[in-house]
Amino acid sequence: MLENAAPFDGLRDRAAGSTSGATWQDPRMTTYDERLSAELPRLQSLFGRIYGDAPSAASEFDVLLQDLERSWNDRSAAMRALDERHEADPDWFSSHQMLGGVCYVDLYAGTLDGVRERIPYFRELGLTYLHLMPLFLAPEENSDGGYAVSSYRDVNPELGTMADFEALAAELRENGISLVVDFVFNHTSDEHEWARKALARDPLYEDFYLIFPDRTMPDRYELTTREIFPDDHPGSFVPLPDGRWVWATFYSFQWDLNYANPAVFRAMANELLQLANRGVNILRMDAVAFIWKGLGTTSENLPEAHLLLQAFNAVCRIAAPSLLFKSEAIVHPDDVAVYIRPDECQLSYNPLQMALIWNSLATREVDLLSQALEERHNLPEHTAWVNYVRSHDDIGWTFSDDDARVFGIDGFEHRRFLNAFYVNRFDGSFARGVPFQDNPRTGDCRISGTTASLAGLEAGDPSAIDRIVLAHSIVLSTGGIPLLYLGDEVGQLNDYASLDEPGHVGDSRWVGRPSYPAERYADRDDVSTDPGRLFSRFTRLIAVRKRTRALAGGRLTIFHTHDPHVLGYQRGDVLVLANFSEQARVLGAERFAARGSAAVDLVSDRSFDLADGIALAPYEFVWLQSEA
Ligand code: GLC
Ligand code: GLC
Image (tube, rainbow, N blue to C red; front, side):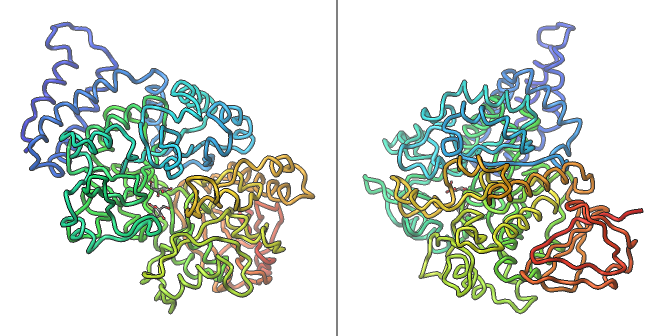
């Protein structure tokens, strides 16, 4: 148990200089000492709740405290200055100036230096947040796009070096762009040094993973766990060459770490802090739902998963105070919400909004999306959504069946419809998606594809561009950080050839990860082309967002349009209306009775007299500001 407060007192003494008797106090250590006093009780209590019974808990905790102090001492002046700036402005990420972009280093720019060369474009677009997909050392073929990490301290040599990484981080910082990278902390690759040692039966490292001598325990765990990548292996375990079994939630070469071992927590806290000190501002906490396992449970979203995240959060508050966490929990919306707190993950993907935008595009109805915005959008203070239209992964239909039932929608049947629609097995569909992990046994299936291909551009549907812009208008205006999948702003299409590349076979998510669409980018200023039409509308929306204060923060109030096809919500003094159908819609004057009648659409600069009601063209949206 962690009754022992000695390390804490020891550090305080040292920081205050009492052992040397000197009167001078290093101001850097004073701030450290203050933060330590503020956060240590929380860290200690979390550690105690997680590891109370583990025999090595107290000694691991002692070493952890030394690690924290060392890490703070190593933190650069530039990062400390940023710490101070963000501490003074804890809601900096909720600004309407924020705009995120995500890309793969190799696919989008070849190398880290290549990414540096694209900074002028990022500035042209207005990015203030750049998520670089996994770029650390990973097995050559079997890497799950880098999500199987072999070392958190080495950059994948094809992309550059750690020095390049730090240089890029510094240059992004100078350009006002926050650097986001993945912290793939649920698992490592089977080539990680820890995994190699575990395989060689090194007792210290065997306990870093969940390894069992036979099927007894795996069978018991698998009674209640879900299959995540059933195309790769059934259940949650994979066999080792020597007959043992190791827990692998995702691919067989991604071994889950055993967080019940306090040494794993300490080791990963160190990996996290060294990334923070190299200039990372936000960590995307990968696969948070899976980090704690419990017999007889689903081993997803367990209470200990939250305690672990909170303990990592406390570690940052002490030694890397400006570092933020973004949770990647693509799960039921009730479960997504619990990760989002200032003392856990300040940011979170918004998978529900993402899925329901696609749902509305397919059904032309806004009921579920409107309900989600009304009931599930507002977040605690000092936290924010990361809103997106699609990511590098599949689209999963993670809405709540209970929410759907309110509208008489059967969740299972409706997911079947959505899957059929998006893989073009539904008459009249505009979408060209590809099924992912289609599991006939459970009926589960998800969708891969680029925004443009899913929205109809690949199929030559005349409304495709309107749909792409409409979808992005939602993520740019509901509140939170809008995150663009770079290349989607010029309408990149599915890359089917990529499916045949080594390591990609059987993983349809690769259709949605095309290489830098150079030709499309070259056309971006020519509005007679699709990329140009799209790009001009994107840049317009971004510019309007950046000068509209009402779009800052996350508060949203729903505006009931009483039209099944038209979504309405209010952000400060801006009323958003969005028509999700290919029919013109008219909202009568009575809808606006409570408002002043003169309004201007910030997007088109058109003036409206709401006393006449409002007519929306197919797929049209307006951001209406009342005119005094
Ligand atoms: C996350 C990533 C996904 C990866 C998985 C395992 O969900 O987004 O690409 O396959 O974690 O790391
Ligand atoms: C994520 C999600 C799952 C997704 C997978 C990778 O963590 O939970 O739905 O399909 O990992 O794509």
